[in-house]
Every structure is written in structure tokens, then in C-alpha cells.
Image (cartoon, one colour):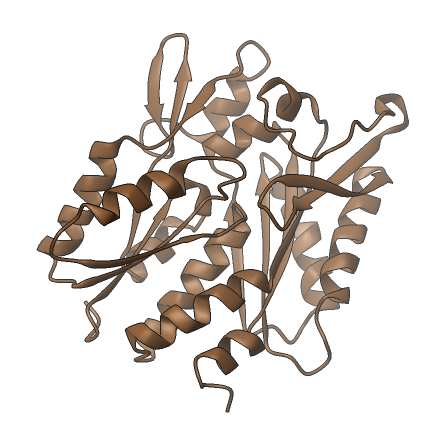
Length: 295
């Protein structure tokens, strides 16, 4: 436990590798997936690979974490000796998870809890939680963290290439995305998060390689020269292509402060379907200034 006694809480859509969760003592509440044969906790008793295998025959319903699982997480945090909790969760534009955690936090005694809507998902949550973990380990105070997280979230941008919009349409998570015609032409939509946390399409490319290049180009264009930033990539059921986009991203943006590589969770995998690739950047300057740590 860190000397400030600040714990980190997120949900299973943060896509943080298990080794990093354990290293930084990050607490996770799982969202749930409901198939015809029962209910599963994301990442606990079902894997993304199993979800992809079942998608052609059944698209599961996804639900919030149970209130009990959130209460248990706060209980574990308190019993471990923490006094403060920084909670960062899946976009309210996709899920009510953040609101649920906020409501339970308001009723929880013995902990000071700050809950943030990431207005993002996957890499966007994960890089933020991991950056907060590094700051806590560097001795940042509670007040410094509270000042830094909002600009950090605003300066976090992620892009995803999906094979098809079919699953987003069927699952009702299409958000602000307009239909993309052209399956026979191998048109691949690139999606991101709008300011309100809903999904929006930002480009469409012909073919997977062109889509990967475009995502890296868009991420690179967001990083001003000389600015400190984090870099992240992720995949869903495409480990070989992950290596390709990782090499592209690291070649185009070699001066990153920290790098994260994740695998899309079961919930987001069910939303978007298999063969997803993602890339994202997170600028640090405004967050450091807000906390008085720019030097």
C-alpha cells in the first residue's frame, strides 16, 4: 500500500494486463455478459476468445457490474488499509457503470472516493489508470491527483478499426456512427469517442493495413513536438496484427513516456465483434500543469 493510502478502482473494460493490475494493486469490478445458458462476469469466468467463438450464433446482452461487486470492492479496499479511492470507469455514453459506482460511493462510509467518467473505453481507461498509479507511486497527493485527472482524460484520444458495424448495430451501441457501406470493397471504419462519450466514426479506409496506418497517423498528428505523452495499442482476436500496429505506432511516435499494450475485454468484444485493433495517445502536459508538476 502506498503511503498516501490511495487505492485505484476501475472496471473490466479498462483492458489493463493482469500483471500490471497486480503490480499496481488496482481493483477491478467486472461487467456482466448474459448468454442463453447463463450470466458470466467479464474476465472472471469467461474469456474474450470464448465470446468471439460464440458471437456467430449468439450476441450476449451486457449488463452493469452488480451493486454487490462494487460494495465488495470498496470493502476490500477499506480492509486493506486505504483511506481514499480514485475510481475511473467506462464511458457513460456506453454504460451506466460509472453512475452505479458513483451512487454506491456516495453511500460508502470510511473512504473518500472520487469517481471519474473516462468518456472513453479500453485503452482510454487503461492508460489513465496506469498513469494515476505511477503518480501515486511518485508520492502525489490526493488533491494533486484530483486536479490532474480531468485534463488527463481530456487529452486522451483512442482510435479503433473494426471489421464491421454489425455488432454495434445489433447491440444498440452504434452511438453517433453512420452506416458504412462497402463490405465487398473491404471498407474498414475507424471509430473513436465523441466529447460526450458516445462512439463516432472518424474515417473509413479500404483494407486493414490502410486502416492501421490511418489510426497511427491520426494519433501522431495529435502529439505536439516536445510534449510528454503515453502511447497505447490493443487488439481483439488479432494478435498477429497487434505486432504490426505496435511497430507502426512505436516507429511513428518513438519518444513516448510509457507504453501500454492491451487485449479488448469480453464486454467491448461483444459490442464490436472480432478482429478489432486500437491505437491511442495521452498527452501529459496539461495534467502536469494542473497539478503544479510541470517542471
